[in-house]
Image (cartoon, rainbow, N blue to C red; front, side):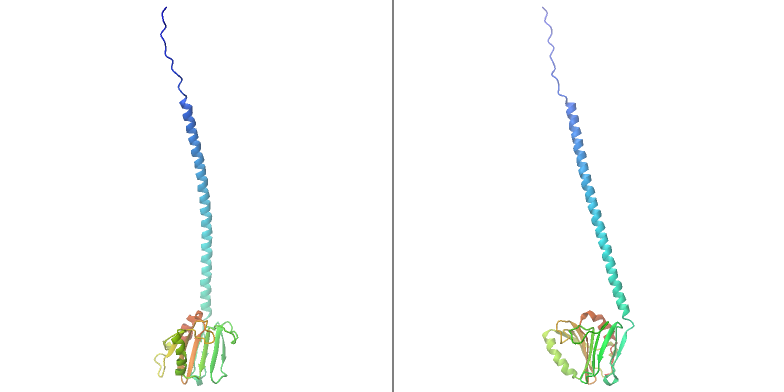
Length: 234
């Protein structure tokens, strides 16, 4: 009996095409999910940035407007001081004159023979003289000898509560018989040692003129307007 040839059988190969497709689909899904997550995160960040930027811009605009208002108010305040008022003292006591802002009020006492001029100046109105007000300007013409008064002030200078330098008002430079005075900074008000101010002490004939501000807030007005225009007959 003739034998039939044996035909080898080939085992079934796994269906790799379906698995590959599944892997690809899963990868695409993961990429899509990742893209959506990233997109959401980026959008959120963009919105936060826009919100913060808008807030910062609004704050910057508000600050700029506030600064502009401050600058305009300062300009208005300076302009409102002009033209200046003029103080004119009696010819008997050297015809002391100086200018001061027109927005300041004055209280001047000339009834005390030992202090022929005792004047208080302050913006708008002069507060009661009994309190410890830091006046914009004080003017005192004293019968105390100039040398004696400077000797009294020397104690405060040595203690460091006052600093001093020689001073001559600009309008009195070159005037005959002028004695240079002293420009003081620090605690110039003996009644209130908590305030820092500016003072000029200068000889006017046989008397002594003290002209000062209790507060450095009025430094520009004191130096430029008051002292810049100060004049008297030595």
